[in-house]
Image 1 (tube, rainbow, N blue to C red):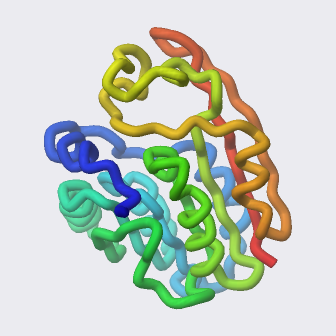
Image 2: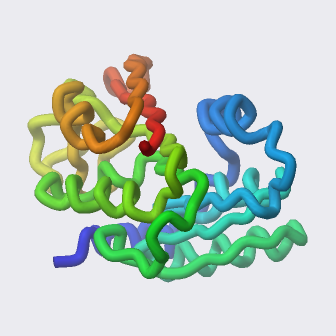
Length: 212
């Protein structure tokens, strides 16, 4: 069973979005990696890279970046975006539950609301894969939608309102689930954020974790 919802191929093929990184990611990277003595040797995995917003930022800062996504259209757009900006990163289509990378390869894995678009039954396997490819003391940064967000408890086909409308399968996370999924990590910091959107309330978890 592939982890990826094929609706994202249509989304990336027909929509223009995701050009700039989230401020949360910028703060996390600045706090943890700006003092790196050799940024080109600091390896990032952009999990669910989409059109390349986060990869663009990381590459611009001089880090070694690999971006993966289930959508070929997303990968094509990310490559084109960074090429236009004269930036270097590697992109490929990958299933999140079985990435091609060796153990202990990355210094950091980031996920900007992509893991949430996978079946709940596969989430533990995806997090285990993140843990596997991280170096000892490697870090994870992620944003995941929380329970109670508009569209929660509504079937995918019936989700007509809110930012997740038309975004295919979405898993909404409780705090207890997030803690359980990241129990193999040495330290986990979880922050809760609530914001108003046009059609309701959007709730999300901001997660940073370190591997043993």
